[in-house]
Length: 99
Picture 1 (cartoon, one colour):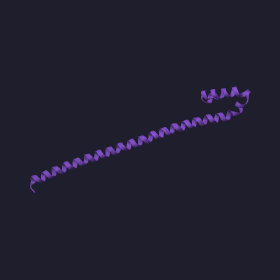
Picture 2: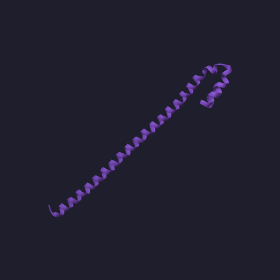
Picture 3: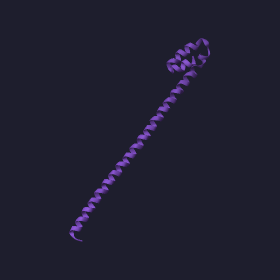
Picture 4: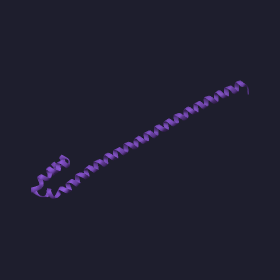
């Protein structure tokens, strides 16, 4: 091999090395992007589940409030007072429906 051929081979190897390093960097960036997207999707799902749990806890609190007021709601004399008191703890529409 002549020196010109060796020089051409070295240049080709350097170009190939640069190309491979660039492809490796692009691959790592895409892998990081996929990981970020996956983590974001999990975060969204967890947030939605938290909203669902909060809604269910609110419904449970309403049911527990009604349960505590049942004896007062059954008596005609204390029914209005119980409804007024419940209005502070529960949804107004719900209290209206009970009335």
